[in-house]
Length: 77
Image (cartoon, rainbow, N blue to C red; front, side, top):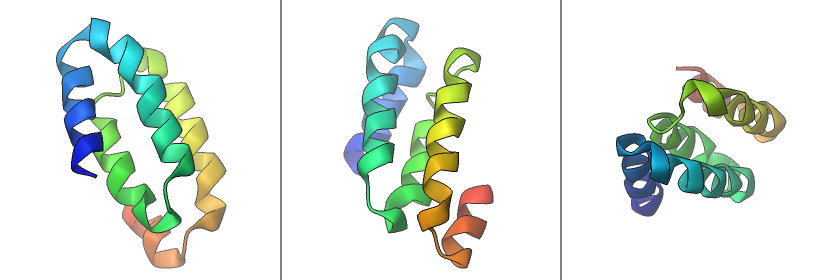
């Protein structure tokens, strides 16, 4: 998870890197374990800009049915 946080920080710092890294981060969010979704979503959120907010929210919404009630609450924060 530290790798996701690091890549998200790099993506947030430079729009050129964001263009290449955000799809990779979203793919990681799609395949990670359901228990890791809230933590990884919070890490990736730092790199989400207005232009890629839609795809980020789509991934989150597509995975919420796999979460427990506690994980879902954590994700909404």
